[in-house]
Image (cartoon, rainbow, N blue to C red; front, side, top):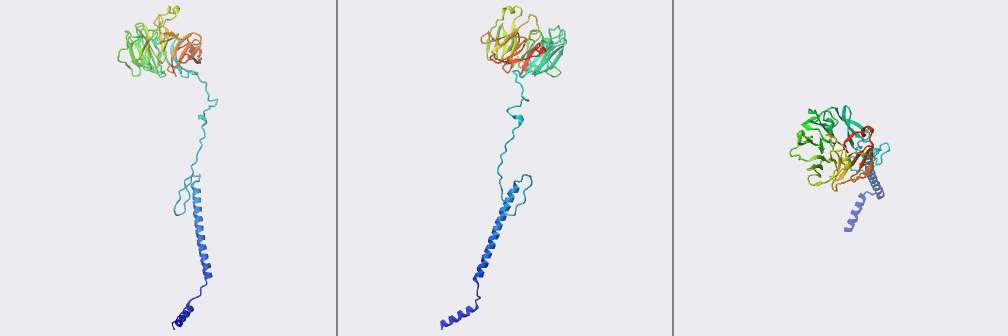
Length: 374
């Protein structure tokens, strides 16, 4: 009975169930999955296109702002560094063109000369082919100017004595800036006699003698006397930097630099010495080893010449190369030796080896060489 009842219930249930076409459902499911895959693929493609477009806009060279990015997470793109090779500047080339090349010279600095005429005293600055008058004073018949006009070793200052009221024996010490007008009064009653009345110690200090015979060391830059005893030495001469002093004490010539003192001797040619009042050092090498020497006149007039070099370590005369009458010998601050001859200038190194020659114009050749500034 129970089995019959079960069959009847199953038959009723079967009549209520609607038949389903599984093939049609499978097709619909397949189409839905295909659409989802297509949408996903399209979205991915759009993201890639947007990224590529953003990158391209980010490196546009026209300076405009990048186009707006699609909404969503942004991506920072770091551009690849660009190495720029600089273009050489033609003016900085290591091989200058022939038009800018200038011939080298053994004396590239400025030489200062003193010219004396019938109505003027002039200081010339000669550099290369240039010759300029940088200072001049009027001629005075019984004045001290011609015997005292001098230039500092650095070429910045000029000093002289003028306004003599005692017949060219003494006057007022003046100083100024070379190449500029005007002068400053420094000291009264300054002696203007002798071969070199004004002597530079470096480029700021000037050793002068008073009319009374007293030596005075004067600071031209500060316009005041230097305190202390200047000593009793005579015939003083300093190296261009003011370090080494050549002088005479109790008849004995020597060189000193404050830490060492070296005496030396020199016997001038006898056949010439009889015509002069003695000799003195006119220039000192930068190491104090050598001095150039010149004659002291029998009258108290200016002497800037020199004719020989003495080695103070051996008291022997140095054999200078070259030929022609020597007018002056100057040791420079850049360790050169300028030998001024009647025919021009010979330039030597510290070992007195020739470095070259410098031609002088005829007017300059007859002037007195006062200083050389590299």
